[in-house]
Length: 543
Figure 1 (tube, rainbow, N blue to C red):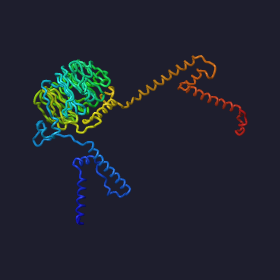
Figure 2 (figure 1 turned 135 degrees about the vertical axis):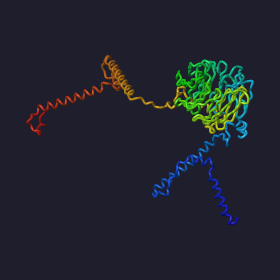
Figure 3 (figure 1 turned 30 degrees about the horizontal axis):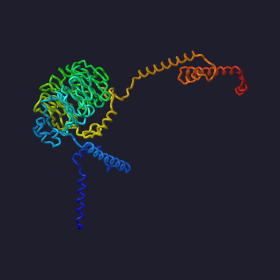
Figure 4 (figure 1 turned 120 degrees about the vertical axis):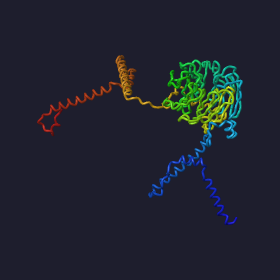
């Protein structure tokens, strides 16, 4: 190589290094967001010692910013998607065929239709917490568990009686079905494990994962809590508001919310036999109810064709929407999208909880069948729909949380990880007493008023005085015996260690006696010494 080619090689190496230093637009945006504000101008500082300290501090800030960018890139690899319209287009005009054609092959496989008209309508639909398994229940007795992402059927059961609702327990290995008379528990092979005869004529089922509590409500209007880890009935509450088929729990505090035929929504805990909250939401029966994952907002729908949004913290309405027909089903996704449906129509509203939206985000019309139920799939941009002709799934971009925590829910967990997580969940199981309306009160130190503390201290002093008086009377009534090492003497010595009320009185009496004796001795000495005696010889006089 000629000597003149060396500068060219150096220039290419420098260009490559500059190209590597150039950040991605997303990474640059993250770095800008994590910056600690404008830096210090070191040129205007003349003090060398101060200038060195500030330079070291700026280097520490820069290193922490770089590390935070790397960690955010590792832990938050994906961002939520969304539908974007151009020009005069509107997102609610987009069809599912267009959305499926625009996404990649993996996402397109998640939109499918299961045509089962002879076994429907499918009023029961549930997904596991990690969103991997789907449980469906048909009114005519068809129960099926499937790994819907891989299109694999796990088990299938025909119970040959009415099925009203289904739900998963702590994971996909066990699930419950509300059948014609009782609630039955099945395993992942489709074998009947338990028959819960305490749950009769059930219309709605729910499960509290952190407390291992299966809840049910039905024709008799009785809300029941059953611990699935021990099998015991924890609580049974009579709502006294008639049959109930609308039930959802608040994910934030595990409080059960029930919608009744009188337009009333009640909130229940297993610790109190009366509802902790009872509010009138609609002028007709409550037909649907949903609570967002943060537990801040609640959406209700009634037969008066209104959809109302409530702030659960203040129990006040925020805004409402009107529909052409009464809403029959409702659900809220992990990212706050509100889905409502009636008849053959399903609408998804974006940013409709905190503020009032002007138009829906997405609209879908069922090609066949009438809507029965639907649920958002956790950690997926998919909405599962159960109708009279089978099961369908549609793509809703931006509805699911793109980043999951493997310690909470892992869609790709193995059998060993599932077994470990089950043990951890049992160890971390919360007691039913911890279900309160405000979970922040658990563990908080409650400061009592000063008057209460003074009254309690006075009561303790009176109790101690009464106890000591009783002990003193008991000792005085005993027959005294001679000897220094008798059992009674040893008992009195032990009792002398107890705080007694006579001790201060005796000490005060001894002090008064010593003072009195000293004064008497002084008077006697003054009377013996003559007044005419000089001070120098007074010490020779005997007292």
